[in-house]
Image 1: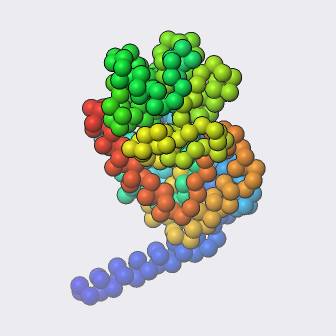
Image 2: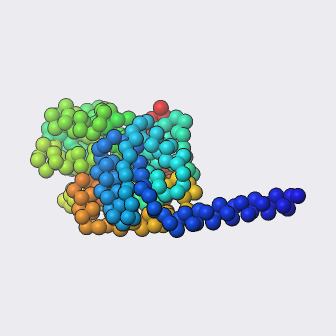
Image 3: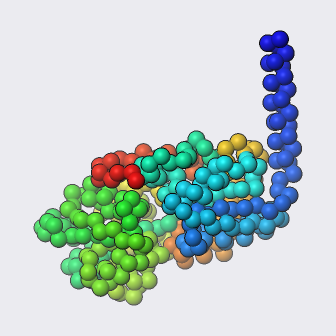
Length: 323
């Protein structure tokens, strides 16, 4: 009896595998949904051009569904619970798949175990900008000023636990510079307060800071990634002045539900890489302050695992508690 039960289970498993393989061979034969866990905004600047390219390549509509809420967690959980058939995929972020592990109580998904990474798409370039009234013109001078004037430096970010807040904490930890964090709602408000001279500095997206730096209403001292951003080749990277400053990669990436057939993942990965490396998309993303990532699915997985570990250390050292 036990042998028959085991045989039945094996046959069932083989039938399921065969059905999955057959489905993968005919994929896609209907519209694909790309879910974005935020209202129309920066994520759409990545998702919509990508969806248009995928639609051209796959011969089926690729429809954007904005499903905001809980900083992307609602949409992320929805995709996790979707059928693993390649027709519902997610544009995730380092917020939904890295920092949420440390910042969200009772997170309803495991970013590493509950998804299949498809491809890293882009890295939003980030930067440190200071007010023109602050008497510093380099990172070295900023550190010297902070140490000579304890308690005088504050920095704005788009909110507690945001990548920009964590970048500021990492700067504090690696340079020993005393700074007080001021949390805002959104990235534009702290940028405007820097321009007005109400706060001396902000960590923000290059897309937010670049127009003001070019206009001369604020000074961009450095980009925070290890390499210079191709769209601003004259702005040094933070690591040039502070070698110990190593910000984990932040990203937009495409994910599929667990158990999505490997052939579908491979096809999606190939088409995402083709899309983001096409000249028009590369130019558009650079214009919006994004650096191209791409690569195999494992690259996205490695960035997640690395970010969870290293951002976790920053969060713990800063005493930021999950909410």
